[in-house]
Image 1 (tube, rainbow over the protein chains, first blue to last red):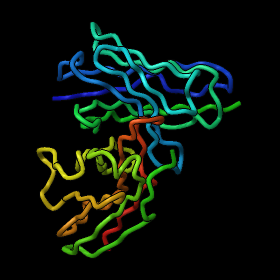
Image 2: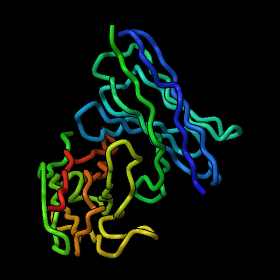
Image 3: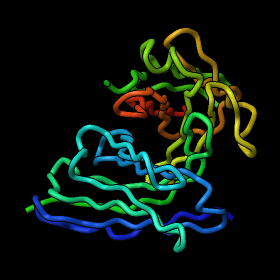
Image 4: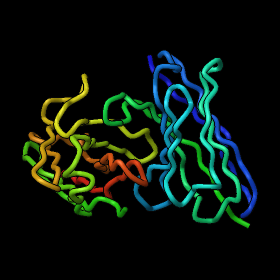
Length: 119
Length: 111
């Protein structure tokens, strides 16, 4: 069965960096685009970034452009989110999700990992 | 690009039908057949309920249905069940930045 397991969250000071990972199993990882979506405390879901199956043409929401970088290692079935220059407003649960194809609905999601940016 | 607009809350009794609206613009909801709907129970992974405006993934009960008219998409839950109590979010492809935009979210309460 499809499984997505995020890791790497934690407490970090503003301005520092953190790298999230998402281990995928149960499907051919290299055939699917992948997303990161976040949810700040008490807020709704916010799309963060997407990477195609080949790893090119990455897209980001405006608030993280230049600070976050999405990448993947298809040989290790793993998705990453490198987060630099973190801000308090980046505090959220971060989910990785598989893109089902077509117009981009996310058909499988992980349980999320909490990132807290605080001094 | 602003978040799509959803009502903050919708409620209904078991067995009733409810509809959640999702209003965007002619640049997102109205332009692409890409609206998806997600059910989110607190502390759990979101679940895809509808994609491409009105298609239902396998395993999703047929009491969940999606539709769209102009710039407004809707999710209807027929025969409301206690386990349907959750937060629901719509999402649309935009073709610009950001590439995807979620709705503001709707809390569904089963009375």
